[in-house]
Length: 256
Image 1 (cartoon, helix red, strand yellow):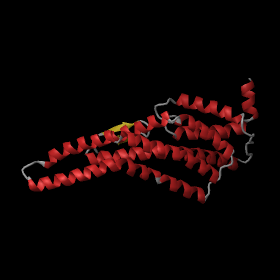
Image 2 (spheres, one colour; image 1 turned 135 degrees about the vertical axis):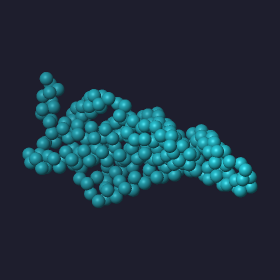
Image 3 (cartoon, helix red, strand yellow; image 1 turned 90 degrees about the vertical axis):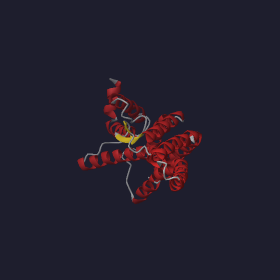
Image 4 (cartoon, helix red, strand yellow; image 1 turned 60 degrees about the horizontal axis):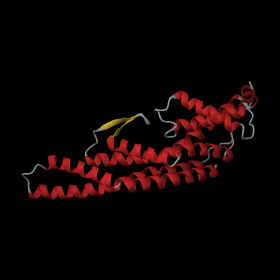
């Protein structure tokens, strides 16, 4: 009964906190994965919302319906934006896998990605799973909750207002997707360009040799070898981008 009375007395605060919490958890990796049951997501959102409602100043519910809908929309938009800033890292890693897979000749070897509900190459799925494991090893799932709490201290409920400077900052941060993709795919792409050049020379000097069949096997084996060889470097790059991501999110909330 005391819990019900607490929710009723702080209905406005709890509602806005719950909306922002759900919006962030649905979009973020790990906690927002399709593999996590909906009941678990809702239960976690309720627990976090109740905890944070008791720690932040109370906020009333606007009497005007238009104002209420505007506040709800702003909270949803803010939560989704924070979730997307976190997801940029994983999108970039999977994009690097897509590039590497196409260069290796595995463009048609697709698997289902349950996180994003799309078809993705096996290399992209592999690198995405690696990024997820690195993220968990760095306590990223706990830092998501910490970021959620920091968002309420930086931007109180019903205090989010979109502006042009904020949009420009989000577009700037989205460039990390291509930066990660280029850095992670560069070893494979550079190696395969050199191999294809060698195969082209051999095709001119030994026309009897079927370079299409030979080259297909060579590019796949070489690509897999380079990916395996660069695993420590890949982990290092992913860790660096994850660390910088939290700083970018903190700077984004300061801009707000």
